[in-house]
Length: 115
Length: 113
Image (cartoon, rainbow over all chains, first blue to last red; front, side, top):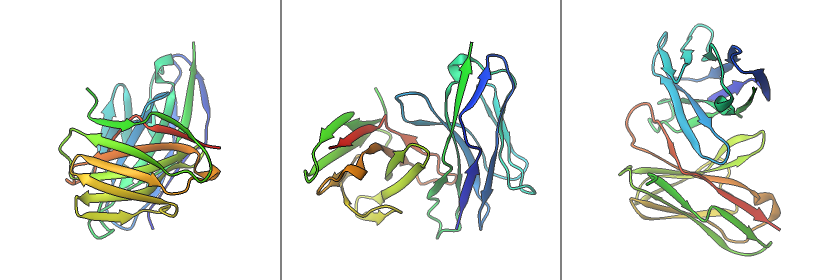
């Protein structure tokens, strides 16, 4: 079945540092890929997405490129801020499960940014 | 106002009690989901519903039941709560279109003593 593997956290960075959170996936079809963010005390919200190979999703300074050859969708940001402290979830949505598109989530990576 | 609301936001109950968590949405979406979040385990799907007459079990449905009262309402019940059901519960919606972006409620934190 489908699966998503993302790097374990917590990831601890100083403000203005470069961020990478790795995400790799296994899917039988041609999935869409997502990054969701969960701020403390809140539900998940979509950060960015990509629907086909080589697409780049971007939002709020974050970027991720859909790499089919390496089955990866790594999240990057050039300069993190304290306000980026949150838990980040990689996810995929695959039509191979009878067209249901039920998403599969990774376990989440906690990011802590210090001033 | 929030598009997806959950009540209560926090709940403490005792082993063996029946409790209900409620979810309402104003997004007009047909699809609704219940997830459970435990530290380090990500999100696990409990139940999902693609329309009012469609209910499906997710990966961890044992010990839970659901009711889709209307397009906008989807409730989760724990018939006889047990301590290992202590977790954060999220409701989510999607519009069934391609790509399946999900829209989450703020969550209900449940503690079973």
